[in-house]
Image (tube, rainbow, N blue to C red; front, side, top):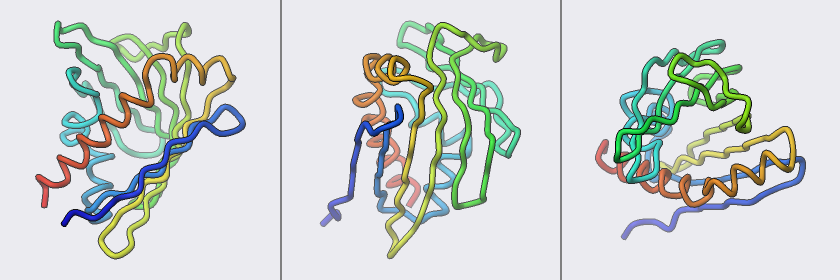
Length: 165
């Protein structure tokens, strides 16, 4: 029987979203799925979208430039700028909407991500905080369907981790 895994999603104070999600996989596998393009491309976009990584340099000061690709082939570009990495423990950075060359778009909100990972008894917990500059930016992301889309992505990550066993 598959264990009942924790999933919490809340909108907190200071324009933040807090997510806690357990995965029935080792820290190594979960960390790799969050930090390697070949895995991110398999789960990061909610279906029917998919992700294509253009470039990825996972390190403090590095960047991940990727596109969410619609079924019609339309690309929505994002750049994740890593500002802190503690190997197999945590990473943080700022995600911005951009063009295909990584030039920031100022018409959409920026998101600061803080991801912390911890394994206990073969269950890895990802504690994720998304911070926004204003209540309006937070509302814009929620209105874009972030909660439902990210839940779908996390379920796809579960499926990927199952395949990697």
